[in-house]
Length: 330
Image 1 (cartoon, rainbow, N blue to C red):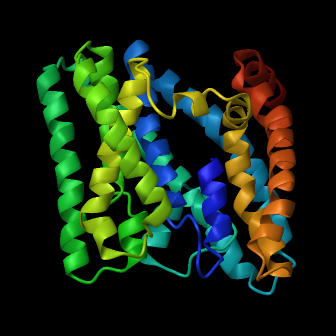
Image 2 (image 1 turned 30 degrees about the vertical axis):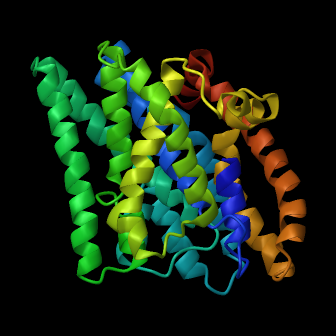
């Protein structure tokens, strides 16, 4: 989340210091694939899984989108803003952004949440069906490996045919690789197949070097990003996540265990929802000074994110909170 915030600050600078901070989205996708797969394997009840995902995503997003829509009513481009809001509400923002720019400066970041929800539904149904039919474990992993390679091949073909950055960056098909890697790691870990501690210990340092280099240098407008760097980056994040799952010592372990980042991780969903709109509004008043934008937007975002987490997320994440809401609506 911290790197995403940095990305949306520095992208407004003509000469950003961290051009590739956007790559943290791929870490988010790898982690999501890993954790969702583990969740499904521990309790393979499709209905319960989808209900839990709904209560995790929908309430805070609904509050945010209602606030955004009401605010948009006073703007001259209200029709366009409400179109973006509808796409986000229907979990279609990534597809809309991939095939139909312009891209929203306030809620464009919700493309990744649309990709997540689509993933929850598709992978939840597919994994549930595969487990119900007792499909052999190597076949499941093999199918995922094929999907990873197909996504890479499709990016390469589309790039060769002149596809624009938004099609390559936002498309659910072209960005599926990180989610698929996370799913493979989740299956391998749950099934006890992730027994490559020596190999991971050897690979974690070069994987960290690759990700740091990408954070400093890689933009999402370069052809090399989609030709091969996104694949290398995804595999590097996979090595780091696998090492963390096996509790191996990694260069970033102390950073991930720091209390401020743990706090940010707890409220990260609400912070993610609100941060881009706040940055865009602050930047409208300070267009040429990203440091001022960061100094104003960071505390505002953390405050509103904490409030959203405390008032909306946390009460409804508990079973008791959901039961109380259902009783009131009944």
